[in-house]
Amino acid sequence: MTGAPRYRVAELAELADTSVDTVRFYQHRGLLDPPRREGRVAYYDDSHVERLRRIRELKDQGLTLQTIKRLIEGIHPADAALVAAVAGGTPARPNLTLTEVADAAGVPVTLLESLVEEGLLAPSPSGSERAYTEADVVAVRAGVKLLDAGVPVDRLLELGRRYRSAADDIAIEAVDLFDEFVRRPVREGDDPDAAAAAALGAFERLLPAASALVGHTFERAVLDAARRRIAEQAAD
Image 1: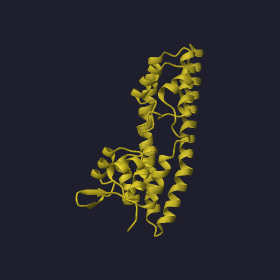
Image 2: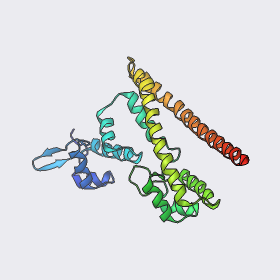
Image 3: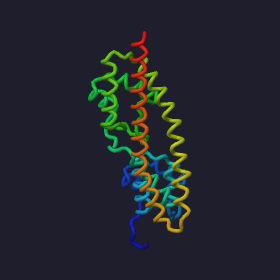
Image 4: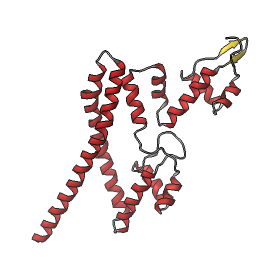
């Protein structure tokens, strides 16, 4: 359209607060439409600016480029709603560096680096340096209490590794159950918007329910194990 804004690639990158290399990379990956060319000059418009800002927003939520591409290309509204819900599943937006978490919890940052390497402290997948939240500080402080009580750090890490492995397996089964009995059935309806609302509503209800159930079961298992140990020692 005559008079519509148009931008060279460097201007586009500046407007979208990104780099020229990133613009070209997104074009190569099919995330950004090609520019309009006049001779040897390529021009972009406001739709490219908005697309770049949208990609950045989704990346900040922790989505991979593959998932972002599917969202941009158009997926079932129920799946889009679930993607948004999962991306926003962390109560607090990551805004802390690992060093800030260490300072707040009163532990060496090298200890937290080992937790990250073990997969026991998971940063946001956004790639930002500020990939942690106050919830991570709370979790680290809980671990510090166990260390202060005399639990050796190597034994605590081993317990964490085993728990994480078991939790991963159970989480996969839980997602499979949700997929089979909730997500797929709601997608079969004729109203995509209703399906999206139903899927999102189910996710928002079932995630805390599943978390509470697993947490309650683990706590009861620990208490039962403690009672058995006390009874065994009393019998000796």
